[in-house]
Image (cartoon, rainbow, N blue to C red; front, side):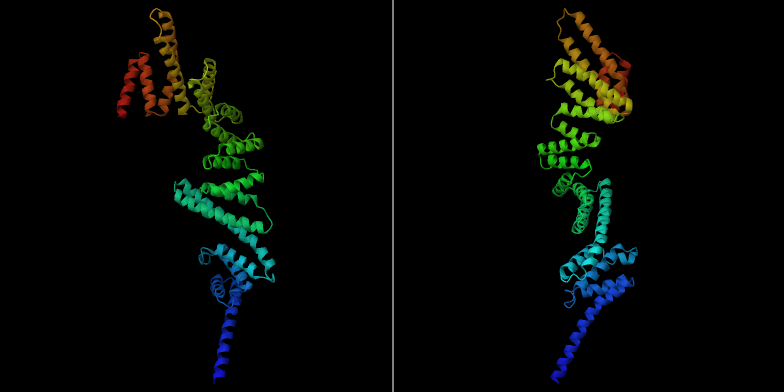
Length: 408
């Protein structure tokens, strides 16, 4: 009787073992017939049971089923597991680990590019979601989506690399997504790789230099990267302007101006560039260490640049306002000089006063245009009030006072 019991127990144990192996076969058959829900149910059981968990076949089939769930156009199947892509990837890796006889090696390698492409497309979708959140000023969601995007791109890159392909495009997207997601260490590593590969994208030099300068506080490295990039792409406007901003931040005005003059030749229709040129020459005019000759040359270059910016874009507030301020400051210097003259030099006083008034008359059209563009700008209103009063235009002075009072 005991023997019968033992035999019976052995029979049931064997039957369960066969049953679990049959789950792998069932998963295969369900998958082959397109019944992904049934296939998933069967392979999930097989992938945790002691009798089948160590079989390479189990994980190979699991990878096949899960990648098809991820790529399914049937929404019901697609919803079976939101993490299907990662599970497919892990299943294939597990299968390769267990497949010591390399029974499924060729088949898995043939399927891995599908997984890699799926990860790349998944990363691209997450990247787009991050951009959408960024546009909506939702930085928390943006960082989260960009972080997931980086991980997806990294998986794609690893798969391509294992297949013998050093996919630079994927590295580029890792760098971009990481930078946008504020993972600067990861972005820097990817950008350094791209620079070493001579990846043909000028923007990588601006990004890498920006990380060196803003995050690492290493201006020397940033300057070297800009120099490298400019050497390779001397006429790339974006890289040129980014280097210019770096030069300005580091008080290298002359080098920045050289860049801006080149930028103006590369893009003759960009009002912002000409305004920037004017603003930097304006700084030389206002710099107390500049010689009179330097100030005069810079003054003329400032006028030329601001006028060009206004010519390109007449409703551009900044060059209109700055041009007005430039002439006002010039007049103020002459008025101050006149006021310091001795009483007996009346003729010289009148000459300086007349020249100052001429500058004030010249500035009016620019400040009036600035006021027209931004009617509520208080700096413009106060400047106009002072000029009208100094020129003795009581009517206009009263009008401006009314506008100023209305703002309070």
